[in-house]
Amino acid sequence: MNATASLLADTICRTVELGVTITDAAVADEFTHLFCSPVTLDPVCADCGTEGRLRDHVQRKVTDLPIVGHPTRLHVRIPRFTCDNIECETRIFQQRMPALAKPRAKTTRRCSRWILQRLAIDRTSVSAVAKALGLGWDLVNDLAVTETRAMVYDQPGHFDGVRILGVDEHKWKHVRGDGTSSFVTVLVDLTPVVDGTGPSRLLDMIPGRSAKVLTEWLNARDQAFRDRVKVVTMDGFAGYHTAAAKAVPEARTVMDPFHVVHLAADKLTVCRQRIQQATTGHRGRTGDPLYGIRRTLRTRAELLTDKQKVRLFKAFTANDAHAAVEVTYSVYQRLIAAYEASGKREGKIAMYKLLRSIRAGVPTELWSVPAKVATAIKRRVVYVSES
Image (cartoon, rainbow, N blue to C red; front, top):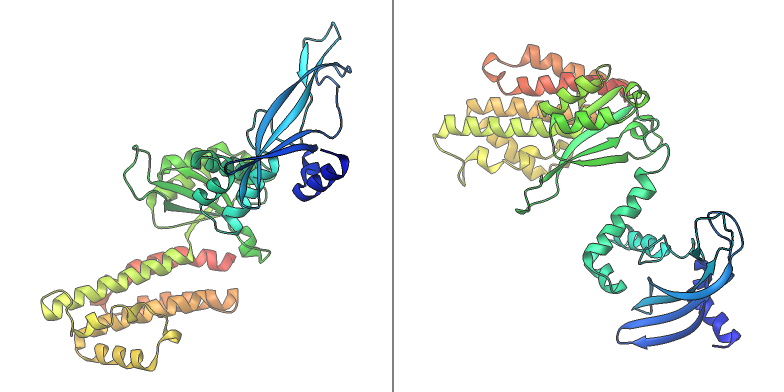
């Protein structure tokens, strides 16, 4: 390939970014093969710093970005040198190509970044990315995981500045597998959200969901990290609470807004089902007033249509026993409103007023349902004041 053609090919394929220049090209089936050589020679021995003597060349094959929709393979002719320094243990060495790929890697460095861009930004599936590169699904997935860990988890300071630690579980596997846990414990940094400086940060995901899993993760962090954590937010799982109390005893354990509201919604459903059985003697059926509003009850008040408001009113007034559902529904709506308050002070005041009304204004026979909501709210009030 002449110099002009090589320059054009290098410009189009941007191979200079990899430290190589194209010397030839070929097409075989779906693959585009580019034959390259280093832009500059680097005969220096990495161990002793002595300039080596050219011995021969070897060919290294790596996968690069697709070209016009076809998988690409780079065949790089890498020189090998002989080290003449008798005091050096290295006798023969290859020229280092740090811009091209990692040692013994089968893909270029920019290929790994391209995989992440397709998966995270373009929302492309792993299978589609693997097909575009002409690689296997497992390899592409491993490259994405490795690159993500290098970009995020392995960066210095990844765990710095964490004062509000969020803990939750996530079910990532929904089919029977090899016996590994279907759940992972997700840990996020909520400090930027509380400070108003940005979104939350994913810190880590660890297999399993138990007190042991979280305890081991917290104990693996240094003492400075554990001392810096002031609040740990979580769901109602007692295992996480136990782990936090043991590993970070000075931190406050509270429930996050999602789980508090979700708990209130569940208790609202339990109350509706209980009153349904008590008044009709059977489970909900079409035509039953409470059964007809089962979804409307969980809709925020400001999102209700006029038709839904009328349906709620008719259901609440259809039977005196339905007052229990109406009161629990009111607790649910006021809880959401407290979290949606415009300021910290307003939210805290609204939460305390809700607690006080539950204690003083709810009939004794209705306490069994709202009490659990009140317990969750009391744990959560601390976090409202912090945020």
